Image (tube, rainbow, N blue to C red; front, side, top):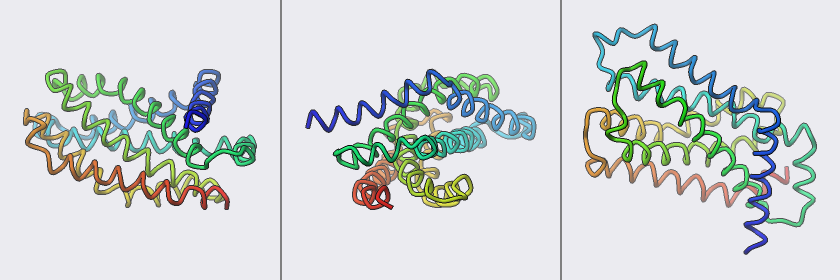
Length: 226
């Protein structure tokens, strides 16, 4: 068991060291998310439309689109540099590779979201600090589901010539249940509704998180062998 966790931590550490050297992934995701929010800000009249009605959708569109950039690079760099071949030659459980990449993607996205949320508060003139606990729960659930499914599909699409196009095509339709859940919950949080009144949405999002992780565990070995 210790060996298994060591394998996961080694992959996570490798990704962090690579990002610290290049700083390409975070900057790309952050700038893209910021641009998405700015585009919506200039196209929406917030004096007519309530921020709680349009803000959640804008926020999660920015998160998902920016996160897709990170997911695309997740296995693409491994493939181009020959690292994936090296990982496959290591006598390690293939799920360790999946969980290593999942944790890396999850942490990178959370860091990006941490910096985007204050800007979202400023642009939409909303106070999220009063509901930071509820919002953190929703963000964690949504980001986990996105990364769980996205990491699996990224490993699948990395073998395709049109991987940059195929990943969003495969990913976004399957994410619809989670997107609906997190957008609804974020909107209710902005309206001051307590998290305890959103249990059906929490259950929906958490269920799909578990399903995506379970399916990934069962299929990642076959996908990586292809």
